[in-house]
Image (cartoon, rainbow, N blue to C red; front, top):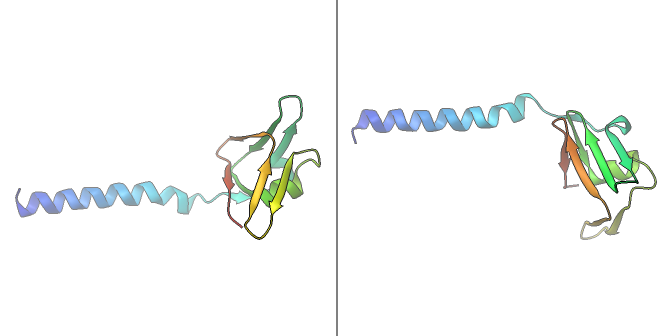
Length: 97
C-alpha cells in the first residue's frame, strides 16, 4: 500500500466519522415538554414524540400521574418502569441525571 493510498484511506475514514457525528451536534433535540409525553393505559405504553430529549425525571414530572414510573433508589439512580416506552418522531430518552 502506497503512502498516497494510506492518506486517502485515512481522509475517507475521518470524513465518515465527522459526517456520522455532525448531525447529532447540529440537530440537537429540543427540551422535553408535557405535549411530548402521552400515557396510554389501555396498552400500558408511554409515548414520547417529537424531536425532543426526555429524562425519566421529566417523563415522571410532565407526564400523567398514572404512568407507572418510580424512582426506587435515588442514591443509586434506580428507576422502575412498569410499562413500555415508545420513542417516536426522532425523540430520545436520556437515562442520565
